[in-house]
Amino acid sequence: SAAEKAGYDWFMRKEIYEQPEAVANTLLGRYDVDGALRLDQMSIAASELKRIDKIVVIACGTASYAGLVAKYAIEHWTRIPCEVELASEFRYRDPIVGPTTLVVAISQSGETADTLMAIRHAREQRARVVAICNTNGSTIPRESDGVIYTHAGPEIGVASTKGFLTQLVACYLLGLYLAQVRGTLFGDEVERLMAELEQMPDTLRGMLENQDQVLKLASDFSDNPSVLFLGRHVGYPVALEGALKLKELAYIHAEGFAAGELKHGPIALIEDRLPVFVVVPPRGRDLLHDKVVSNIQEVRARGAFTVVLAEEDDDEVSPYADVLIGLPKVSTLLQPLLAIVPLQLFACELATLKGHDVDQPRNLAKSVTVE
Ligand code: G6P
Image (cartoon, rainbow, N blue to C red; front, side, top):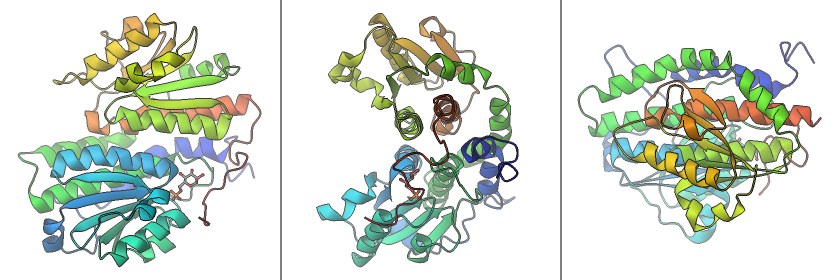
């Protein structure tokens, strides 16, 4: 009913606007005054976590894109090799996992059959399993050694939004926790990152108040048959998730690509006026930002209409942006928390304009409990 949707047209839109609070709830009680991460239901001893020599993240759909972001963060902070695999592929290829492998199963519902089968297989090989899950007492956390609940509140819209953001936060918490246990981050780095994370609900609130530009863009693009998304580093999974949202909700052809891969194929798709969304990393000391700026020039030179998500005062990229969507300044690894929000709203709005059922897209289920 309308009352349950608190005045919003769709649960999805409501859930997008609930993200500041959801992120705050994922963070709640997880960082002690003495500066230690606390994951009470992790239930895997520190001595064991010190012996872990490989991490495998397993998930489906949107959760798998949270897993891709996790790989960048976890490897950077802990120096433990981390791979990400779609749950439906994992157990059918005789994967190498054992007692020193930590499997991280990400699932909003905690009931996805592919993910459940994958963790059962991992545990048969004596791997330790930690679940990142939004549903208390669901099957996946019950069959895992430990769990990090995201506490986002029920997610009703089939397309995941606050589920995704809070999965990202839980992955960051896990990465920082492992880094503390293993002593791989120095100085005040954990403190600095936690301060940024704790600022995130306010930052998101500010962003959500200013999305008119994205809503307008959806009406400009409502007749477009195809949209591309590009990103590098953690912007790459954001591109994949932005494209998935459009496929799920607006039923239009959408692809996410690693921007550096353009010249190896996707650039052949670029034609006049094709909308291309590009996630630009913050201007840091590395070359990443400049590489993406040149990728934007490459597609624009071939006629693409560029919608650029970049730091709000990024004047190096603004000359190449047909539309510039400003993002608040944040560390590179945390940027997906912000960059995905306009893409969620864009897909929600476009589907609304096309008259689709945003909360229950055709052919999809909220949780897929059969293989
Ligand atoms: C379904 C949903 C997706 C979701 C995926 C994984 O396909 O339509 O939105 O990302 O399942 O769900 P889970 O509950 O395991 O995160």
